[in-house]
Length: 240
Image (cartoon, rainbow, N blue to C red; front, side, top):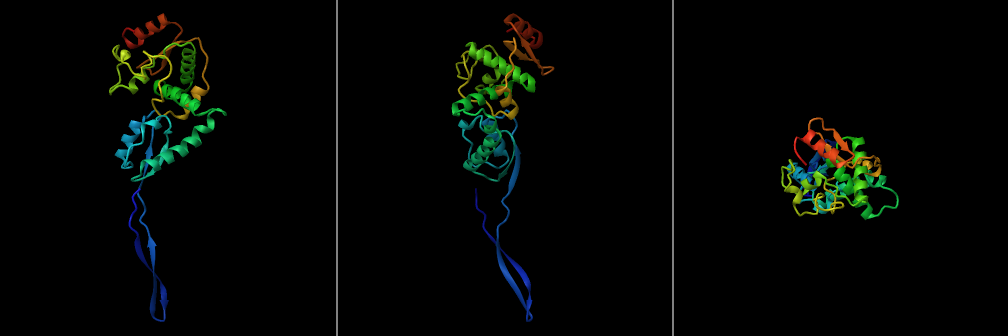
């Protein structure tokens, strides 16, 4: 953070014997601040771009903090260095997220929770539907079935992400959950509390598949691949 030069203020205290009593007081001008809201599901790149636009950043926040920059409204000094920002984000993350993580969880457990929550955050907006999707995700992981999550493809794809193409699904990337089984190597966004809670409280259902209806924004669930393929044609007007 830059240091601003001090200013001297002359303050008149009163009079004594016809003379004026005064003193010099050392003061500092107020360091400018800005209020910034980080939305749920924003990536590190999104946050760096926003903070640069607001005049906050002097250097980018590192990519390895993906998932750990808790979405919230913050007040930052203008400008601030990355270390100061990381401290503020870490303190808020510890207060808001770590307090709801199951007791006994280690850092790898936390990373896995955040990775799952980051996928749920980007895929589904509704709170209860998120719990159903979290349940489908857990079931697929347990049975070694690819997650096939579009949002993970988007993380490694240049904008715009949609529509997802068949060639996208064949790209050799650790974030391609169509091509590779298991979770991506790290979170794909910075999830909010609602997504984290969905992952911590998944709902068991007979569903194995889902898609998002672009018109209603509702999530359409399917029990079988045939049912899912029919829903793809019905809601997405395409073929799987």
